[in-house]
Length: 524
Ligand code: FAD
Ligand code: SIN
Image 1 (cartoon, rainbow, N blue to C red):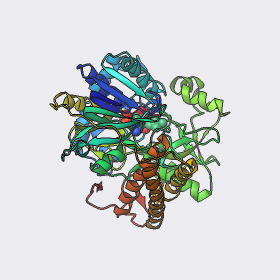
Image 2 (cartoon, rainbow, N blue to C red):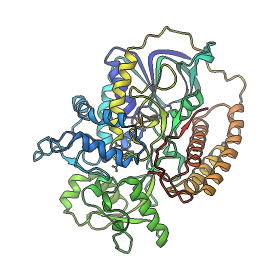
Image 3 (cartoon, helix red, strand yellow):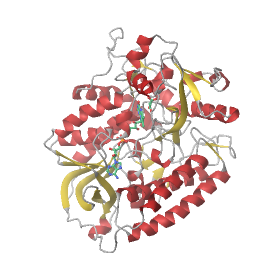
Image 4 (cartoon, protein in one colour):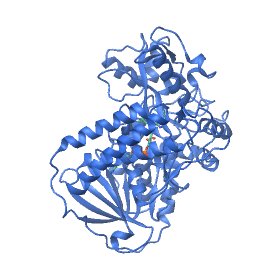
């Protein structure tokens, strides 16, 4: 099946939805592909909120400085300045779409502004502790009723369609092949532009705050197509994921610490003063490392985050979702501390783009968590990522509107050489093995030996899956595992090549930070 559109967007998180709406409002025909349901994405689970300078007591420079400090010398300053300067417009756009941020009549902005680690000012707009779902539900309503957008739920993008597929030797993208997971048929989506808004690769780790869709597919597709991929060693571990046998990936927002939550050992001892003068409000890399250190030193499986000393009414008003979810698991956060552990949370590296989301390949864009603009450097400042999706999404849409492209005929996917997959167990076994190896060997604290071990495992798994991929019909699991393996390879290769510790990358073999900060760039 071949379908042609002005733009093919892969991903229905904030990056994909906002870009789709901006293009469609300019009468561009958009195909919006998403692996599962429209709302299944990292954006939907965002809790803390979106950072923006809208309070006249705050300043753009302060937000820029906080971002640069968190980024540990590796941010692209131009990207930081540009994105932060455009934060008020991003908020206005969301409000114009119908997002209702939590109000505060006592604040001159009219909004309640919360605080998170690394921010020297209250500047996070939020919708209680369910900011992501409030934003995504609002935009999904718009997308579903838009006459210029066709939504393809349950479509898994497999690989980009490049010039070589249509018999021309150029660096241009003509669309994407995607698997319809209901029929197992591969479709060819032709696009005058193709947008990767496919999110990060949190699922490469055993424990993550990310939903199942976060398998780094866009990063893998772009890398295979010849794009540069930068700084993949910088995986952000969120310090406080709920520790409970029946809770899958539930985050306890950093806003809990922003509003006074205290980290303690299970013995009741407060420990952050031993790690950073900003205590619980230190940036994430420092806080996650401190928790990891304390857990390993004392042999605890978790630490405690305590907000129970605050009035019940305050907790109910600010953290209703966390309160409810914990209650459902038997934890009353108004009376007792919450058991928490660090978990993989955000992919700071990604496909290299400029501020218009343009990649190394013509007509191919990357926006949001799959991209690397330089905003986050070696460690993302909390609540800067939703902002990046919106600001770069707008620029990408403007760039796409100016493209002039002649229509071409794109080919069907060739499945003539493959047969039905005989042993599903190989995929599930290899998936588990990869995620455990990454957790054990490529976690918060790294060593050369562990990284080399991880690389060895990854290479073996890749050889098996390559064989499988070449001989059997595609399935969503196989596509994802192949991509996760490539993301793992990029993470480990980047980590091995960095002979220093910086931001989120901490190596026991190279504990010092070089005076000059350099990006890690990988290209096929
Ligand atoms: P996503 O929202 O992850 O969307 C990716 C989309 O691509 C999904 O729809 C997925 O199904 C689709 N997709 C992927 N691969 C394919 C494929 N092969 N084919 C078809 N579709 C595909 N950031 C903040 O700024 N503030 C916060 O408060 C905040 N809280 C967070 C809380 C949690 C629990 C998590 C996990 C993250 C949080 N973040 C937060 C980070 C932020 O949510 C993400 O960085 C951001 O939402 C990324 O948006 P995105 O559109 O790039 O990707
Ligand atoms: C959180 O609410 O702690 C997540 C914020 C973020 O990842 O930016």
